Amino acid sequence: MKCVRCETDNNLKERTEAGGRCKNCNHPFAFDPKAGSKFTDIFFNNSIQTISSENTLFFTPKQLWYFIEKRLEIQNITPFVNVFASSFLLAIAGNIGAAMEFYFLSPIIGFLILISFLIWGSQAKQFKTKKRINFARSIQVIGGLILLSSVVLFFKCSTLTNTAFFLFLLGIGLGIFLIYLGTRQLSIQHKIPQPFQFHQSQIIQWLIRWQEINGKVTNVLRTSRKMSEPIKINSEITAYSFDRLIVCDTAEIAQFLIANNFHFEHNCAGW
Image: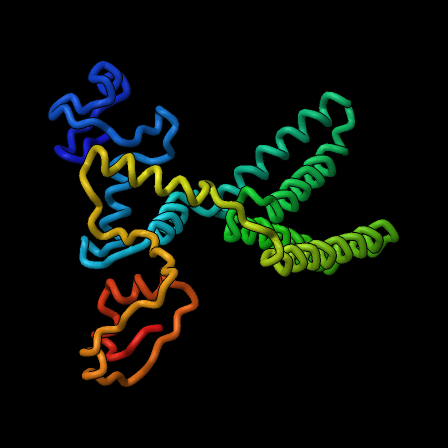
């Protein structure tokens, strides 16, 4: 883990021996993944620099919270990962079938396990929406492959038997059902609540911890205070003219826009 001050790389042993400090410059670490944090000092510092556009824009603690949440998202599961998971599940099914001495059941068991896994993944709350969509699309792909294979094998059969016709109908029905199931799982994604990895109050604790060690974060906006009495407007404000008015539903949004000179750049007044 690199030090945010001198960028010296410190391993766990070196950090522990130095009492949670850098072995080179003795600067303390604010966050350590080995101590329970999910990110490092470099990650937190880069997040602040990025959201503030290199300290040129102001931001709210809530915006930083959303930004860190997004950056900590695990990369979407790719089709290659799904193929690996499928192979692993099929291997388990093969072992089960061999142990039961019913080898013909192995593909069926593997298929059922795989589909169950994909259905679970397409509606699991702990996965991000894009991951769940990948699971649902995998169900559609499997259904399409079964449907296509059934049609190709049916027309390649030299002789049409009752068994072949039954398998053809079974494949067509199963393929259509899986395509429908995948489509249905895609349609319910907006109904699945997405839990956050951290509570919003934690961002304040992180900022306090960071500022105790690395100094004040000048571009973070404090929570606006509710005024019990109306604010006296400077009489000079009437000397200015504005082309448009922006009405904000919260004081935090107005504070954010004003701090970043939105009203001057777009010649507007905020309310």
